[in-house]
Length: 213
Image (cartoon, rainbow, N blue to C red; front, side):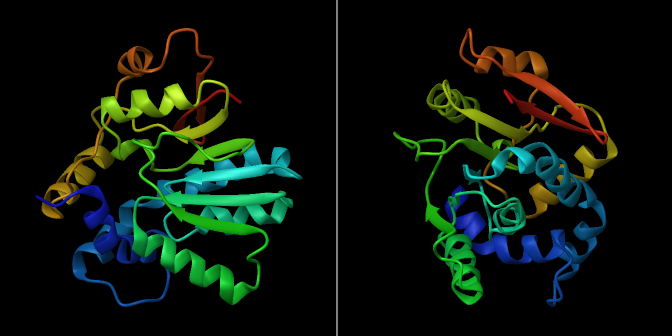
């Protein structure tokens, strides 16, 4: 059975091109899916509004960075450094290539990592994850939040509810044989997050996030 790494090694480029409307040829499925991915660019704009002004002179980590789109955008706010982490080696290679072409290796670094299993997190002041915790099961989420006890984070939240977007996404993921995609209720997240850990849900521009910032 395909695992998350293999899935994203195969999917990350067409997914990214479809999501951010880049001019590459796409298969029919990804082309159609692009019409329902407006929230992907929207949640990045929200994250930049929240994190951007706080990022100056700080280290920002992007969990599930893909090919680095958020990492490049947050540079506008002059952080000390940006670190991108992703399970896909293909994503990390593509993001690193973009950094080298832009001549900003001193500002941005990318690493391959399975954050649902990683024993130690890198040093950072803020962690951002957009469309990231959607692919972590309950055990992996519990492990991650244990590691984040004393860290600041801002994650988009895949709320479990009836909606057209959730229905269409479920069909897409099934046709693409995604090995694991998860949605959670707020009550389920309360049971996953370690007791006593500070966090709240933030609704902004009709999107939902979970954060302690």
